Amino acid sequence: MNLAKELNDAKIPYELHIFEGGVHGLGLADGENDLGMDVPHITHWGTLCDEWMQMHELK
Image 1 (spheres, rainbow, N blue to C red):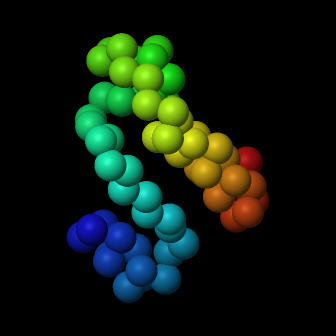
Image 2: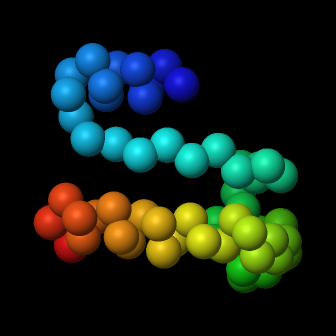
């Protein structure tokens, strides 16, 4: 949350998603991570990131 505030204050574009059940090391949450966890709802973050990067012409 502190990083989001600092980015906002500096007028740097960002997007913040906090997913229920998200833990560090979850990766794409597709079961192919160190935890072996498959969490379909969280798997969408990769697509969201890709869309955001395209929107800001970063990809």
